[in-house]
Image (cartoon, rainbow over all chains, first blue to last red):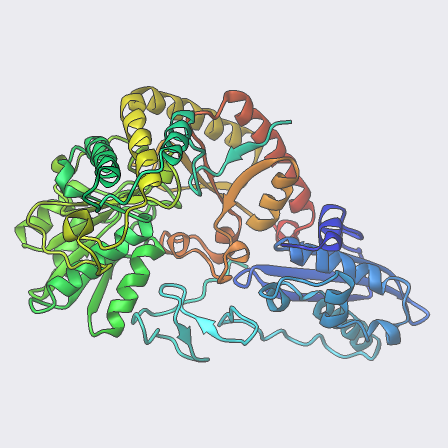
Length: 172
Length: 387
C-alpha cells in the first residue's frame, strides 16, 4: 500500500516533538478527518533553524509530517514557502490516491507555522482557524453521510437518502 | 518469530481436516450436481451431505438451508428476496443503526425503489430494546432485519424477544448471524427467526461460501434468477469444493463447540486483564455480558488505528482497526458513532479477534508489542500532549 520511503519515515520518524518557546506554530486538521498535525519552528536569520512535529493520524500522515520537517529544516523561509503537498508526496515516492487529500496536511501545517512567525514579527494577532463542522471524505470535497454513505451537499444538515440528522462531534 | 493472527473476524484459517477434504474433492473431478449422469449425481450427494452438517450446526432441517457465495449474498438474498416477494403487502423495512454494510446497503438500494425504512437506535453498549422495534412496526412493515451479534463490538442482541414480536405482528424476521454462527451455539428454532445468514470463513471453513436458513413457508424471491438449483431458490452452479469444505468445518465446529468456548473465555480474560494493566486511557466497547467470546473492541485514546496496525504488522502481528483512515471510504465506523464514541476515539479503535489456535504466549507477545506501539504513537500525538 505504501512506498518504501513512506514506511521508512513512518518507522523512523524524524524531528518528533514540540519546540518550547517556538517562534511559529501551525496546527491543521481535526480528528473527524482522521489526522491532526502540529508543527513548531525556531527561526534565526530568516532560516528555519529547528522544526518539530506532533501528529495524530495514519501511517501516511506520520510519514508526511516527518518528511516535511526534513525538507524544511535549514531552509530559508523563502525556500520553505515553496514546499507544497505535491512536493512532499513526490519526495515520499507517492501516496495512495485516497490519502492525498486527508493525510497530506504537513505542508499546510508548515505554511501556517511560517505565517504565524511572520505575523508575530509584524505584531499581528493569530488568525482563527475556521475549518470546523462538516467533514469531506474524498479529494473531490464531497461530504458523505456517516450512516448510509450517500453523498451530501455542503451545508445540508439532514441526509436526503436516509433522513438522518448529521451531527459532528468534536472531542477537543 | 511466527506470525500471530488477532484478526480472525476478517477470515479464519482453514482447519487441516477442511483443507484435506477440499483437496480430495478437487482430485475427484466431480461433475455438475445438476446433471443426471453418475458424475453429477455423486456431486449432488456431496452437497446434500454438507447441507445436513451445516443444518445441524444451527438446528435447522437440511431442506431449510441454501448455499450462497458469502454472508453478503445471504443478507442481500434475504432482504431483497422478502422485499420483492411481499411488495404488494407493504414497503416498509425495519433495521438497526449498527447493522453490517451487507444489510444497510441492500436496504439503501430498496430505498431507491420506493421502499421506506426505519432504523432503531442502540444503547451505549450497542443493544437494541425490543420495545423500540415493536413501536416502529407499521401496518405496511414487511421485514425486520436485525443482526445476531455485531462484528465490530461483539454485542449480542435479544433476538428471541424481537423474533416473538415479529411473529405476533406477522412480519418476516431476518437475522444476520455471520459473526455468531460457529462461534457461539445458536438454534434457529429456539430463536424463532425466519431467515438467518451465516458464512463458512467465520468457523475455519473456506471463504466464498455462505449459507441462508429459510424457515419453511417463508416467501422469498430468488436473488439469482437462473436454473433450478438449491430447490429453485438460487440459480447458478454450486461451489462444490467450497460447500464440501463448509460441511466439514460445520461438523467439527459443532462437536468442538464447548471446548472452544472455554478456550475463548480464557483468552478473553487474559487479554482484557493484560490490556487494563498495560495501557491506560482505553475504552472497551460493547456489552459486558451479552458479548461474543472471541472479540474485543478497544478504543485507545489519542492515537489512530491504522498506524497501530502498521506498527504491529512490522512485528508480524495482524489485527484489525475501525479507524476511518483504514477504511476504503475514509469515514468513521457507523457502529462506534451509534454507541456514542466521538470521532477521535473511533479513530483509535482496534477489533481484536482470535481463534481456537490462539495461545497464551500469543496473547502475551501481542500485549507487549501493543504497549510499545501505543507508547511510541502517543509520544507523537498532539492530542496526548493536550491531555
